[in-house]
Length: 58
Image 1 (spheres, rainbow, N blue to C red):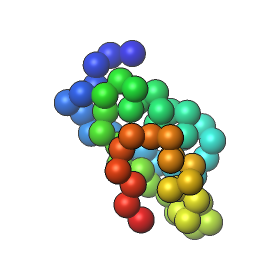
Image 2: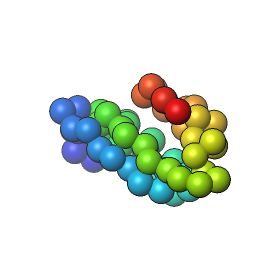
Image 3: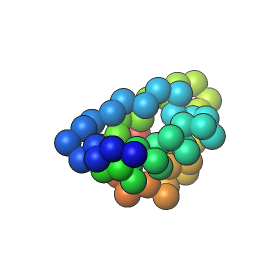
Image 4: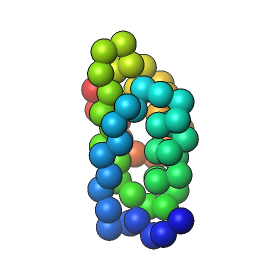
């Protein structure tokens, strides 16, 4: 994957398993992430993305 160290990427649907995998790949490439989830998925985001190095705000 390309070097994304100067990129900020908004990832929607962040409560899904697919988004977790995509987020990990993007972060490994150096991107800063903005995670967007809604409804029942929102409270699960900190747990789902705990492996990421990025800060998580709820």
